[in-house]
Image (cartoon, rainbow, N blue to C red; front, side, top):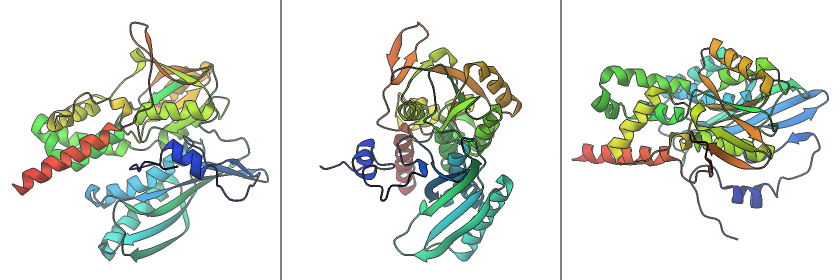
Length: 362
């Protein structure tokens, strides 16, 4: 069997037919193992649950070293925090490009240290070296770990029919955060420098650590039942992941969806600049947007908790029997929302890069 090559995460087909079928020796202590749509693994040892998340170390020098180090830590920490348990230990392998200077590495490392300090994360081990054939943004890999008592965590497999669905911050947070940071001249042309400077702060919303740990105060499994970060393919992708992992369907109400005005303006500006129309922000990469399911009687308390923590949120739908994701339109008609096959962020990003490079070369 042959598989098409894709940029980013491998397809469900390749994952299920190759990776999931070949996982080495069986161990009954692995209670949450590799599965599409699940952010972390869980190994039970005695009365403890060890929660592990594995991801690349993602560093973009164009962000600046402060932003790069912050982003690298929060990508990892967010995938652990959606368990409802604070991330505790970081093991990091840095395979540095030959072009990276000692001073640049110092800035990156100290930024990682400072952010771990803020989050209460201990860097417990790792490896660092320079190697040929390595380039940004993937400069290594890392394991983030947390420790909980058995049954004192949630996964994206635990949503139940009757639960309500909450979205924080709105869609396309990462899309707007990266575009406004990388290409501020596009925004300045449309909205001026004051808005452009404000829009750069969207970058710092690209984390669900605060969102997830705030919701955990409702009670894990008794209040919040499942949480998932809306990364690739955005809100629609996260809803599909959660629905598939839990074996349920999800109904979303159009009149409960919301988008930040600054995010919407960023997407409109880049749509006009590139000529790429019909951008669906709900299909756009959105690290920082938390999708969570909560028990119906705890939903209003969840919204109040998030509000008091300064996090915008809305009850956007409900978990139902069945499968798939459905949108209930304002006229009460219902349509199935397919899993996105293309994240519009990449279309906007690479087209913008192409136009700017061409303009600079002329």
